[in-house]
Length: 329
Image (cartoon, rainbow, N blue to C red; front, side, top):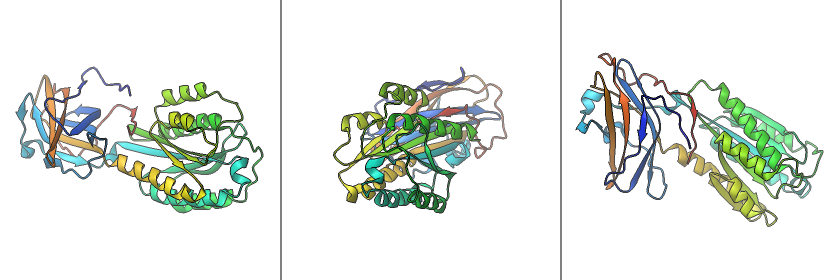
């Protein structure tokens, strides 16, 4: 993912002999009087998140000199002060679902998924058939009861076009995500699309290439749940930028949704918002953050400008990041 930083910030990834942990910087800010804040992820070498790391575990160096935690007042801030994460669940409501008896199982699994996901993130649910427009189920909400009510109403909704406008629905769902992210007050924004389908695009309203161009531009996370033997695994795996789960039959739908919910929850645990008070008062400096957990270590480097810095820093203050989108992986 391409990140945009002001000229004062130069991003450098640090490996330097470290092994076992991957620290990836996503955004950084330096603001007067002397607060420096970093939003980054911590993963093991196999991509597993490393949650629950205390602020004092991170070692902060400026120009190769270790800064005392008492001097830096380093703290881990709640990411919600700077980060918004919205989710759209896109459900295949084509004839192969609604006319085959699969819909009740799908709605039940989607309801359980919503209960888990909305504990942390606002979510909207939309559906698609063969028509050009999305079928609105719920607006963005953090209340799973609202999602359940919308899904219940969907059980009695008559579908107009039994075909499958998968490509077009993905494009329209991304637009819904983008509109919601644009309303966020937080500068850092995640958008996640979860697609459920039991087939491939049959309507041919939007080409596959055009759909992928939209996804490339939007930089959103995409999980896909594919049901049954009619799916094109290669096509859906390409669509699933973040994760793909195949459900062999109706009985496996619930497990598939649970797996995606677990992946979303786990991914959120790898992000940290570290803030500290810099002792520097002028000039450009090399910041290095190092971490060692369970005999695994890693680190990152970043340059920041301290011109105009002075006393009176509060590391708990909300950082001022430039607006940008972040992907889970």
